[in-house]
Image (cartoon, rainbow, N blue to C red):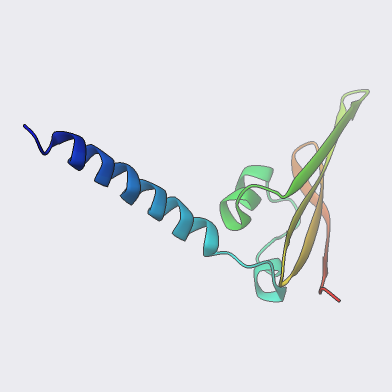
Amino acid sequence: MKNLPIMRALGLVLAALMLLAAACGTSYDQETYGQIKVNMTLKEVIHILGEPTESKGVSLGGVSGTSAIWKDEHGTINVQFINGKVKLKSFTKPG
């Protein structure tokens, strides 16, 4: 019974390390950019890239648009979604 708080703390530390490892696994480079295809959903792109660094959206007359950016030391991936699907994308290297 005395080890229960230690086991809980160990479990939390392990979970945090797993999340950190998953977040560090994706780099925003040309290869990762190539995995993003026109007509993919935002959910599919997030599955590949993770949550965007920044995101903006607008809706007008039944049409919604979202601009999402993923950025790290390897590059910046910018994806434009219309009604939840990729329509435009770009990749720029830092520097």
